[in-house]
Length: 227
Image (cartoon, rainbow, N blue to C red; front, top):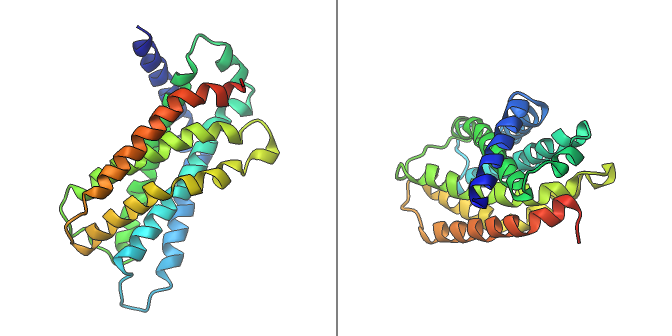
């Protein structure tokens, strides 16, 4: 069946990208940039005073968004660097498998980055995950799915010409506003020990479904350059 073929090829692409990316330039740059942002913002607070939960959550997700751009650019540059993109296009691999494989690899790399950002936010920004224990992991899962679904779709636009390298971040950030707002609100409530507003989880779920569908439909045209 075509669905099983798409999933099997996507898994192969994801494993290949993860082998090449773990410890690579994109992941290292994402982690270092995120840590730098968190540390610099921590210097703005008066000595001995914690950063407000809303601000701390915004800093965490800002670091995650910048990390996403670096990770996705690095994933798509793996084929561009050695001219393997044409080989991938001519292989018996559905384009949807490329999108799904890049999204899975990006999801894993983004989680690795956030595994560093979250403790750094707790330490440098004076936060504590005092809310219900399920809020942070569920929010990370829901928000990251939307981030990588959109990032993997638009990542193909940033490849092919050096002049287009900044295109991803220009297009990506405005579209990410709903998922970033949801992540910030829920993380702020987790940091503050408040009960979460579960309506934001519904917004995150709708965002994930929208751009997952858009990725499956539009990525073949974006990646192959067909009109």
